[in-house]
Amino acid sequence: MTSTFSLRPARTSDVAAIKRLVAPLAGQRILMAKETVAYYESLQEFRIAESDDGEVIGCGALHVMWEDLAEVRTLAAADSWRGKGVGHMLVARLLEDAKALGVSRVFCLTFEVDFFKRHGFEVMEDQSAVDPEVYSELLRSHDEGVAEFLDLARVKPNTLGNTRMIKIL
Image 1 (tube, helix red, strand yellow):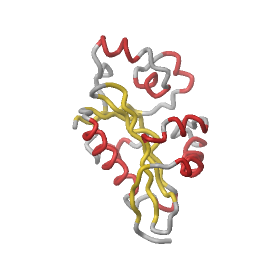
Image 2: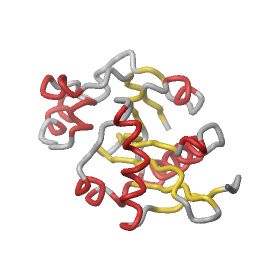
Image 3: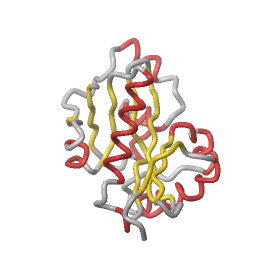
């Protein structure tokens, strides 16, 4: 195994690898598994970490929710690459992507509070991160991540018990 890797936008051929990275974490209820079609539909949101020998070793996505708000989601690294900077590089790149898109706040729903604190995220003390007008617009979204962010009752059975965190860019 090599010890270096690079980041790139995801391609359709990466969906199977993304699912393989997510599966053990979904089994541990750390991430939520998605249908294959959902990965294809959101593929342009994903960044891939790839080892020098072409192995997909990590993934992460940036999902824009509103004019100034996005979510880091589906952040995963292969077991053999944990602790080697894969997650750090993915989060740094996703935050760069957020800035380039004009987003000023990025949130995440995570069990890895210390990891995200090291990247400048803070636990959301005030869960009303959006004003009432934006909240009413976001209620129209069919995205389960948006529903979880808004703390809607309909996602309570699926709630993993994670922590809401936010970073101001």
